[in-house]
Image: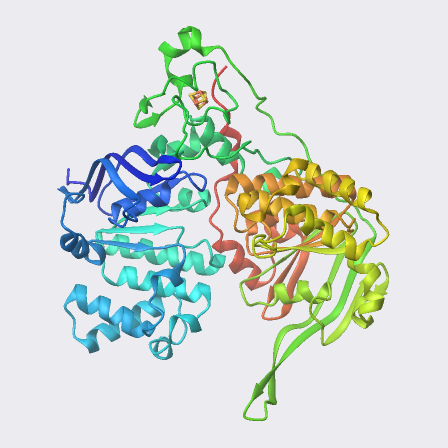
Amino acid sequence: MSTPVIQVRDLKTYFQTPKGVARAVDGISFEIPKGATFALVGESGCGKSVTALSLIQLVPEPAGYIAGGEILLNGREIVVLTEREKRGIRGNNISMIFQEPMTSLNPVFTIGDQIIETIKLHQKKTSAEAKALAMDIFGKVGLPDPEGLINEYPHRLSGGMRQRVMIAIALSCKPDLLIADEPTTALDVTIQDQIISLIREVKEATGTAVLLITHNLALVYRNAEAVGVMYAGKIVELTTTRDLFRNPMHPYTVKLLRSIPGGEKRGKALDTIPGTVPPATSYPAGCHFSGRCPREMEGCASIYPELAERAAGHKVACHLHDAEFMAGPSSKPLRHEPDSLAPLAAPYAQRKVLLDVKGLKTHYPIRKGLLKRVAGFVKAVDGIDLTVREGSTLALVGESGCGKTTAGKSIIQLLRPTEGEILFKGSDLARMDERQMKPFRSLIQIIFQDPYSSLNPRLMIKETIEEGIRSLKPGLGRAERERKITEVLERVGLTPEMMYRYPHEFSGGQRQRIGIARALAVDPEFIVCDEAVSALDVSVQAQILNLLKSIQRDFGLSFLFITHDLSVVEYIADEVAVMYDGKIVERNSTVEIFSNPSHDYTKKLLSAIPKIDPELAGLWRLPGR
Ligand code: SF4
């Protein structure tokens, strides 16, 4: 058997922090053979990205350091190499695709300079050969107009295009190991599909080993041969992909899998994991998942469960699979959550129309020349019709740049449309001036993708929510406002004391809850959710989707759900409108769209989503008595 490309043995990567030593990676082992993909999955803050930085020898110094263990590249230990030798390995042997491409592209050089230099440096090609190769690979990663792109600077490209440039640079050197850290998170599903196919092609052609770090479990299911589930610095389950999805044995893995939205879970609550990953400075002495585990026993928090083989080739770190522990006194259950998922959501029936959009157009003028004359128009939204019924969810889907966000903003009058009717409860919002619009402002709210940028960092949460109530519900007195803030914070699963904190003191999921609380505080009837769950971990996303479903059921709210994530759509939406190039190309019930799409573009979108076989969901049971 040939030597694996990478062997990681008991790797420990620590950071010195004011609160003590943070054990970000706390003794993990795995290996990746030539031409194979190994996936690391788990929530944010579990140590996946630090593992990647350790492998490429880019742990931020001096705070971060490799505290123990070995990393063997083609059998050679690399932690002990000199800085010069490590530089030689990066790019030549190990390439990495980062989550945020802007931070890894140099803003002062053109895209062409950056890729051509890399190719020349690592592949001994002439400038002309390197340029030809760069153009070829730009075409393969789906970048339009490679010739023109060569002379562009990074800031002139969209986020998705920058990501594709990064991927092109990483693949251009045909590395032994490619580390892909959330490589497609920011990309549309069709581009994601192209990128993943390209990585697969390179892997098959060159034998490159791939470390895939992602929170998209369907991507793992479709693309990886083996998986390590990481939790709080440790690998808690390690097996083949087939085994993990057929027989998950760690409670954390089961919870993660059951939090994935999908059509088969419609009408039911998604499984969620209470609490958050503990800080790396204060892991429990025993199982790191104790405190959040639905099957926790008395000894779990104090006795560490070793990662051991519990079935052929299937390693698990959990006392539930240790016969000796289970026969002893420490195995008394502390909690035992039921295994079933609660039903959620009212059935969709023929309800009254709340919002009726007819022939909506939003065109932007293109101005040119010294006098800024109008030379044409960008038709961002070009004559769309939509209907949203009371207490129901309409999903507006399509790729970036298709006009869906502009449509959402035009409907709630954050942008003035060029033409068309927006009938809300029978009144046309498009014809109203600001004064006439005022009574409708509280009924129509929006929740954004990035709650952090929509919260004022200098205001306490109380002040942020109160600001909205003051302006839209001026009749409410101080005491009533405070009661309202307490009520909405509790409704979204936060405690009333949290109103005295600032945005930076909250996690991403909590900030999204604050965004929802702010919207709820003014008693809306209709909320536009613009990519509201796209940036969240799958476990946090499940909590927010459950929350949105439950407030819809309790308050009869209607949602316009703007997203590119079709598995979320299949779970949450009653109807779907598919948008392409400013127009709606197909509209139907969610069940019809997913089972019987008629437009070619809808078919293309649906065929690009990586899917887990829905029958497997029936096998995801919590272990134990
Ligand atoms: Fe950890 Fe105990 Fe839960 Fe197993 S049962 S995951 S050892 S807390």
